[in-house]
Image (cartoon, rainbow, N blue to C red):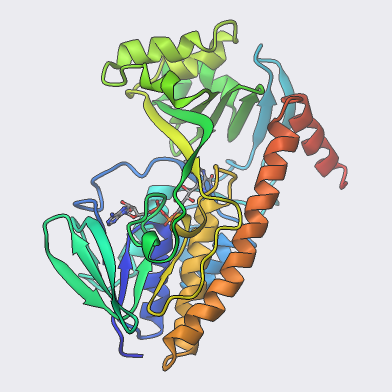
Length: 377
Ligand SMILES: Cc1cc2nc3c(=O)[nH]c(=O)nc-3n(C[C@H](O)[C@H](O)[C@H](O)COP(=O)(O)OP(=O)(O)OC[C@H]3O[C@@H](n4cnc5c(N)ncnc54)[C@H](O)[C@@H]3O)c2cc1C
């Protein structure tokens, strides 16, 4: 195949696609809005599953590099109630099948595996349009344009490629997450560090939740979730970190201090992230010369699968293009059929799990789900 594949977005999905294409000798260029690989902290830990994310890393021939990133012990998990009582605890015995790595480090091994110049940083796409006969024009924020016979939107929730295929737009889920970080936690924030333990900690109620991970070193990264309309967070001035932190902490009035410390003791300004979703089972009719992967195709509320699915999409699209070098449309059809089915199943299961574990009965419903799982039910 001689077509230069144009990929928009250097997230985990777009980079996995570029890597698998490279392994098959297919040229690709990735256009990324951010000015450099270090422009934004990639934050967060991801558990990479043996049934999707790890399959993608195998296709990318990066399993050794991936293994070197695994943070030992981080599959340990505990569930606390809002008073700080430990309701459930599971150690990391190495059999979890969901090793944890830092997202930024995973992205870096993908970047390092690509020929120099594959990613064009500082190329924010502002619009796309069809030119006919499977060709598309991409316009960048600086006014420059390119046209391509194979365009892949790997540009996340607010994809500028998606309008070529679908009228769907993300809708607010009713929940927002605030990110905080506590550094050198064992010495500087010992009560919070003890509450989080060695891996992840979940303290959910039906409308409020504090989840936290122990990242590399003894950094605690907390995800503070609130079920509130967007007007609620819009009324908070996030440019004033002190005021914003106090307002969020107020929403957790009465919670155990070692849990609220994950808000009040933050070493970084709190970052608000409203959660959006595309309709479950979002799909489109085949349009020659263009497709989507990852969040651009199937954004859901966080359910532990999004990055894993984005990588598998990238790997499978790359392999489909390699398998049909003379027939791009056959490749896109094969890829999309499998991707639509897989992402719809994951979205339905994710929504059911959310309702069952984090609905009205949480945290006890969450504990029940884990103890049933431990008993093999
Ligand atoms: C709070 C939270 C927790 C999560 N936890 C997990 C988890 O534990 N496990 C998991 O598997 N998933 C998790 N996810 C989901 C996961 O983050 C996403 O599903 C995943 O990042 C999707 O990858 P992607 O490559 O499709 O898109 P992205 O990671 O969003 O990458 C898109 C890329 O495109 C670039 N871009 C965007 N617009 C443009 C433009 N106009 N022009 C050029 N470039 C552009 C962006 O800068 C970015 O680099 C979580 C999500 C959230 C919000």
